[in-house]
Length: 75
Image 1 (cartoon, one colour):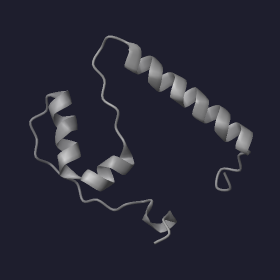
Image 2: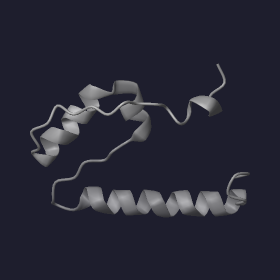
Image 3: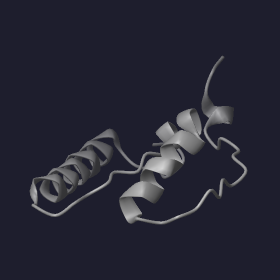
Image 4: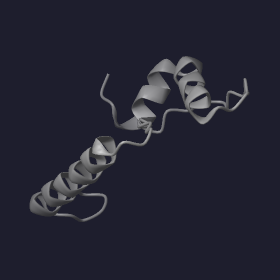
């Protein structure tokens, strides 16, 4: 909220709208794949392989990963 100068109310409204949009996509009959940056950082190549499979892409490319959230996580 501080970074983008948003109120708690605005953040909640935007989150609710985003949730509605994702649920709408999931309820459609077409195939879908939800990509999660955090999951990618955690699972790496195994997660990327699921995306390749979903897209029917033959690849073993794995980009170097640097977790952009690392500096925001208190350890």
